[in-house]
Image (cartoon, rainbow, N blue to C red; front, top):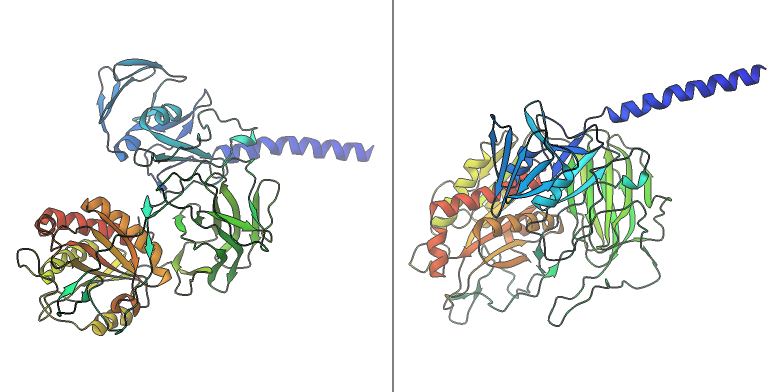
Length: 550
């Protein structure tokens, strides 16, 4: 009898605890992310009485460059963007898209002064890809307007979430990769001289010229797709040589990229190490707060046989580390072969690229989060060294000082950044002196600014970003994409060269060639204040992204 009574008591207690646990999960507010960046809203996304996920339309629309109007008398919200106009009325299921009636499953509503719309409608009408992470109760939105070169997998539906259906849950948010990148290796330099100009080589007559051969064809980055709970990982055989992705290639198209095999994942002291083989890995790293987490996506990736997965397709590594609670890994997208590594953190940290990275291992250092970061901006040349001469006879040193000063002024407004200029006026600083300024300051980042030139080939134009160390490569890719967008110039790719200032600095370092001063049209643009302000803002955005301050 006592046994029966005890069993009955335990059953009753468990029945009482289940709704309490469910309530704890459901009471956690939903989070909203757009293109990997968390949006701060007055009203968090919510699940309404119809079991539909509702999101605030204004912050999403405005973040996508749309205009939103509110008419109080008739309780009407209008969203206008390029070729689309959406008109909706609060508490009415009928909305108008380009003057055509569309029926919604659930009506827009007002919550604390914010118009809320079902996320499915946002997805269909505004070109947004949507995924739902049940673990963190997060809605992830991705703008596909500029990323439509390939086909995409339909996102996991999030408008009708059922709490008892595990298939509705996806893993952490997919990340957005740079659209197009070519990494070129350093060219051999027989004289080994330190140079401040990446693209110039001495000709037989002593004049300076640039190798105008066309860049190598760029490798198209894979497009991330939604992950499903049932996705089966592709396991690499360590005894087999690296293979290539089985992507169909048309005549003249780019070659598929070599697969990167993830051999091991571990913490080694205060460093996080991913050992690889096969193709060179170019990771995409994002960090989130609340919860504190680092996410690493490795495209064209496979997991080695030693990295075991559970029935849900996820592997876990438990770490005895003050900062790291656990490490998870999975094949996030089967179609794009994206291996995702998630580091769950106990506290906020600085997660920085390490100089120990190489073609066979990715290394990041973990350190306590800084209150302020030091960034050195290096306007090239100066004083007796005028740099290259533009089409109309102006000197490069003037252009780069103008841009460098604008970058410095913008960085000085950032509370978490201490900016340093290697020169503030028309003075000459030796190359080793520029390196010493950065190394002595224990700078977190170094950016050298230049203008390009090619003698006798006025038609050549475009923008180049140079790096040397492996730790600088992710920084280079991010920065290059922002500069291309800001400048509108031709893409002359991300390139690797052993230039003195980026070879001898100890932190992630870049040398930027912001256009060709020898090209008449480009020179005219480069000396305009508007252009310089746009480029300076792009450089600051790239710096903030690298420091995880955006």
